[in-house]
Amino acid sequence: MIHLSDKRFSLTLSTIWMALFLIAGDAPAAELPDFTALVEKNAPAIVNVRASTTPKTNPQAQMPGNDQQEEIPEIFRRFFGPIPRGQQPGGERQSAGSGFIVSADGYILTNNHVVDGADQVTVRLSDRRELDAKVIGTDEQTDIALLKIEANNLPVVSIGDSTQLKPGQWVVAVGSPFGMDHTVTHGIVSAVGRGYDRSQQYVPFIQTDVPINPGNSGGPLFNLAGQVVGINSQIFSNTGGYMGVSFAIPISVAMNTMSQLKEKGHVSRGMIGVQIQNVDRDSAKALGLPRSGGALVNSVSADSAAEKAGVKVGDVILAFDGSEVVSSSDLPPLVGLTPPGTKAKLTVFRNGKTIEMPIVVSELPQDPLVKAAGGSKATPSNRLGLVVEDLTAEQRQQLGLKEEGVVITRVDGMAARRAALQPGDIVLMVGRKSVTSASDFSASAKQLKSGDSVMLLIRRNDVTSFVAIEVPNGEVN
Image 1 (spheres, rainbow, N blue to C red):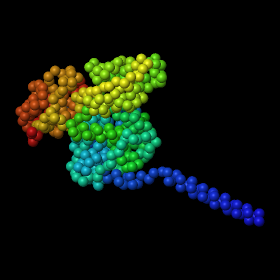
Image 2 (image 1 turned 135 degrees about the vertical axis):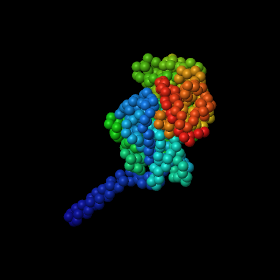
Image 3 (image 1 turned 90 degrees about the vertical axis):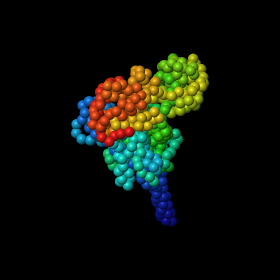
């Protein structure tokens, strides 16, 4: 009886242990997501992007400052820096990245730094077709480029809401690391609203631990619903390879940029006209703040929105239109993404009191080195293969110009590309004649004949140089 009891007891324990083993074995598998359906649904809309530039042989075309483009720091490295311009040894230079189709008629989003300075951009679709892509416009501040291919009925991705992302959520990246198309990697959102890069102060980056490598740049970051929530853009690295810290541009920022590039050829941003710095513990104590945080105002621009609202040097901005400003890097994205003319509210700490200030957001002046095609005041392409626009009064003031100069917004002609001309260059003279407007430039270009060589006086990055262009056959209005 005792023996039987022991046997039964032993059998019961064995059954329990087996059940516990099976439950424990199944539990992790049940909790881990399966990305198969997500990838199968979205892979057809993800593309490989290749950008190439032809070496320049014209010594006149070596504009100053090109060497600086090679000095890309390894920390906060971008996957593909700006393509070096000017005379280069060897053959055609290429860079590659990823992108994704956002409309069935061929609009594609990728990173600006993937296509920056390229003479030709080629897109390889999931069905292995390779199509030439037109750069509709780019925005360096958000690192977004909008491309267009001539095709219809294309597969598209679903766009999600990046404002709903939270640390700890699963995310998936699909792209072409090292040229290996449709590579899938996954991880979690490590943080949101990261503002670490001064050159992109208007982007509240999504930080992830998704393995990202050269070639993923410009590719989509998905949530578990299969929606794009970000564009993989940068990595933190001491070696140039993946080290567990990756950054993506929120899709809400990217879609806003894309919409503006399509509609008006450039991106308008909000501005209030203050310079700011972080509030550390010592500053908080001196200012009477209960804890560190916010953006300390150290300068207010004359006649700016902030001055009109009553902001003063020494104020600490704690919130913008209801969104908390934890550190000074939080404020530029909040203001920059606000449409100019919007009525907003500042929460400011001053002399021991918190006060609310109504403010009307003004518009950040357009950088004359804009890299976007089109514009209401642009000339059509001409014998020189250049599209130019009039400079605004603000641009002239910023550049220190009086009446002369037009800005190049698009380079269509191969001769102009070989001369290393690029969007953002300022044309001061055509031959010996100064140009003061887009129509003036167009009139000068019309007088040129096929086979003529003409000298253009070009201003770039505060440096002025002559560039020689030979007028090719067949490039007319």
